[in-house]
Image (cartoon, rainbow, N blue to C red; front, side):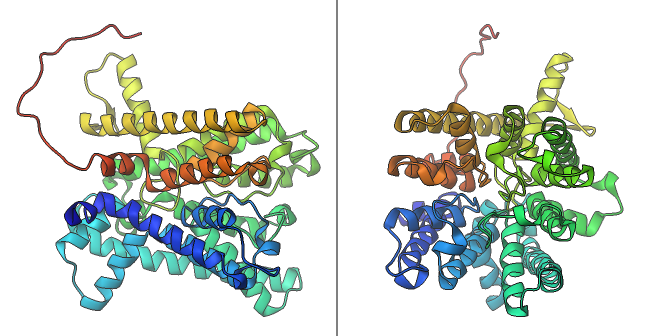
Length: 443
């Protein structure tokens, strides 16, 4: 029993669950709330789950409902969630003992999805270095801007800058502003550093690890890095173009700005829709076409083994290569002159089908317990599963049953559908026989 629980694939979701429960307990303390009395259980649980799962959906306004202590707890929770509980625990063990036990290497590998067991220690050191560097640089830029452009005192500017920076790098979407980033919609000095931190955090640590040593030699990049980088660039540009095209003259969103502001905020939405959760324009005011584009961006998400959620960029584009090979009648699926193994194809297909099942089930349940329109419910469910945090404004009005559904979706989306499936079906075995092959009619 103990060995089963300590299996790396199962230990990861259990650790996330433990931190969510610990965060819930802290947020229920009277000191965590701005007004007298502690937060109700469901409010604390929802907020803790959203923070640990780096989602950003909220049922209470963060800067007004939670005290400074409560906001600090939320910050720590999404820092832990983004950094990875098992990654952090393994790194601490590395710093103390200067070596890793095999069992801890396996746990870290399950969380970081590193390709080689021997790379785990180096990746963990890089995770800490990149996390601290990006968060501190972003904090410095934002604090300077808030101090000299918005007349904040240094202590307030540093706190707000630090909170936004950590939230951005971890793709959490929590903000110390009730209107999120809407107050900075025309300030590129605030939006661009936040977008940069979001993109870097969403690339995934294996990609950052590889770029550190091979930035000048793209031909030597692994297929994972190539797909992640080119796929990310394609989605960011496509999201910007689509958002600008549909919202250009919408008086509720981009229609409020001149063309530089339109492009800045279209780009911001494109970046944030891929699991960051910040918003500088009103999501509820968007046209249905833009919401449909956002559905896709949220579901795809960011890079593997990073702070982003979704089914991941590599999963989406790998299946695209498989479909393209099938259309062309090729027996092998290839990408960048490399053959894609059948095991990887099955894993990608499994992730997508489990994601569709989770989203479909969540939509059906929420439609059964609420009276919201399908487009709002679908947006909320995909946002939760993709750990995005964007909303058309229905989160706080969900009934308790609906909030519990969102909590489950955030947890599954953060831990990963494939990890959950592997944890539930822990025993691995190879069948000593194979059945005869038969080809059913497809299509």
